[in-house]
Length: 420
Ligand code: HAM
Image (cartoon, protein in one colour):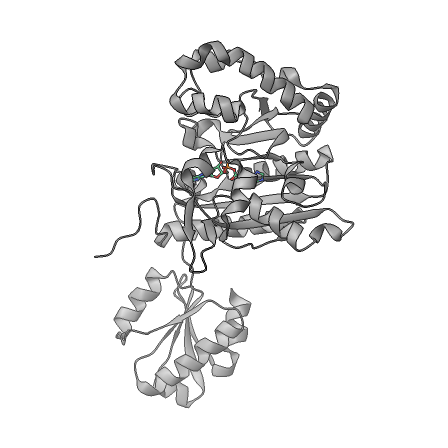
């Protein structure tokens, strides 16, 4: 038997209903915030991720799926969505429009991680990227959008952990202070962190091994190194979050695992499900340097992504989602060959009119069809028989009240739509 690759999941049955529910809600809320759908390739040139997510990030150093295609090109399965959207913005000159660009996406990403609960190799994220505006109103909008989606999914006790990395000057001052502080402690840090000290010391702050140790707990905080402008910017974002009624906590240890961030960075957790590193439901931040670094104009960007796989794990525990039902509105039952022809025709008619319809495809007898209709929670049954059909009539049964009546075959669609 061939089995699925390590770190991937099959989504079927009730879980699939839950996924559909989430996808639908995400799309509805994104549209109400006026975000436009964008779809970029699942694989891109490897160079894109090296130059955006960063050579020194864990993702690029250890977790990408890389291969050479038959044309000897270096290709990488996307580990995240931001880089592709920014590439598309530049390549398609979407920046030429005078308006802000607000995109949302929902798709699979690939990271060669050690699989465990909430950590997969094929993961699905929904997210947004807003390009062309440096306004703190957008920082607040992006954070509140992520927060509201999770809230509308009934995830309790949400909290945004937020920090600011500041502008280039603030970051550079901070880096110096951090290096100075860490240097005497280097031997006490893990091997990766000793390497990070040389390449990108900020990365040390979110090391999975050293993160909770005393050394990092006492390390200087980015927030204390913000210059006046960066500090004011951060305070404005917080003020807007207050207005939008978002529960946040300033967390100076948030630096995020990708290299492209500056200014606002944030992660969202539910305090009720906050036991492991895999509890972070979503994260994001500003990346005002990235567009230029990828050979685009000097413009601005901010976004977030949430992991649907992690969200599903939480929703499965919530009663509300335990009886998401597959809903069939109409089940058409028949036995004879003549009845079958009518069933096919009626089913097609109902479907074209938007009624969720099923019929018998397994040559079952009537008893078996009644059982199948019940399993499908069919609201109405259309029970065909040759004698009624000759008179142009069909038997319709309300499968909840069990009331039955005969109606004209030409009135089926009107009847069902009027009764649903
Ligand atoms: P990220 O923090 O790497 O950010 O991922 C965002 C979310 O994706 C995480 O909070 C988590 O819920 C989910 N996630 C990440 N890795 C896994 C995994 N192995 N298994 C299951 N879920 C996972 C980004 O990807 C940035 N592109 C977000 C962003 C958009 N920043 C600006 N714009």
